[in-house]
Image (cartoon, rainbow, N blue to C red):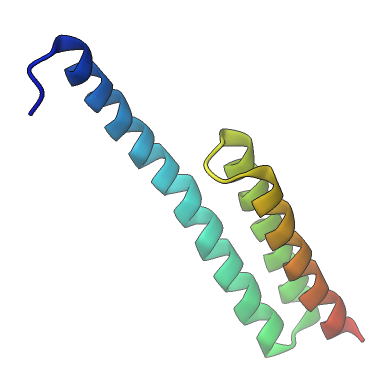
Length: 88
């Protein structure tokens, strides 16, 4: 445990941020996995809805700085690619 006042405060801030980041990162991961499952089942309307939710979650995580914006863009692109392949 830190003895310096500023470091004690910094540790509290880091813990708060860690929990907040974990929430948004976990939400994005869950949404992505649900979208992949929906795409694999082959039901287009459900898959489309799940992908839209996953894109929202990724955008929110990128906006908060939890993941990099290019990382979010790459994941969204891959999801959309799989969704497009389902429609063919």
